[in-house]
Length: 162
Image 1: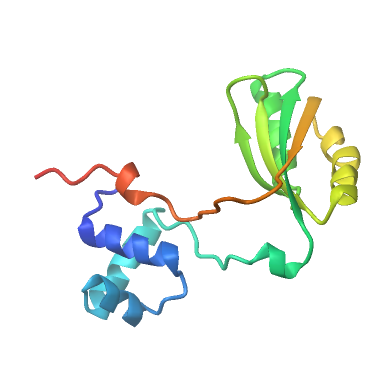
Image 2: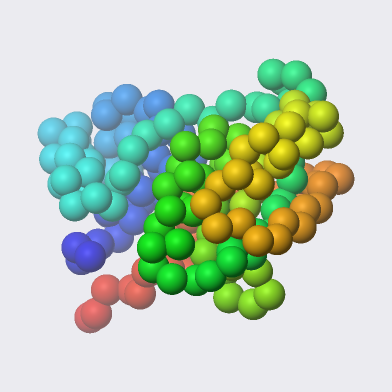
């Protein structure tokens, strides 16, 4: 990981909150002139710290939808079985997040679908046919209490040495 200074952290904080900022706007917010600001952003991108920039959509404004949390246990936990399952999950657009877990299940998925019928179809037609699936447990999210996409930079990055 590259060494990040306070200015890099300000840049990352600003673009996490609004990736649509122009370079001039970003530079003004972090106290740099546009040219050095752009150079820092490009360096952060080249280092992979900024992986990509996206637009976040308001799912509720797009129509009815439901988030389901699905625990999946595989028949076996070999490297090949894990890789095959993970590859299948990458191909399912309904799977918003997929985590390899410790505990009672092997994977935790967050699935977003239109309604219960769409979830049933997803489970029966796609998830149960994914490689190695032995058990599926699901829970419906009744209410989204918090949704955050920006990382807590202050808690993740150690302050620079003095």
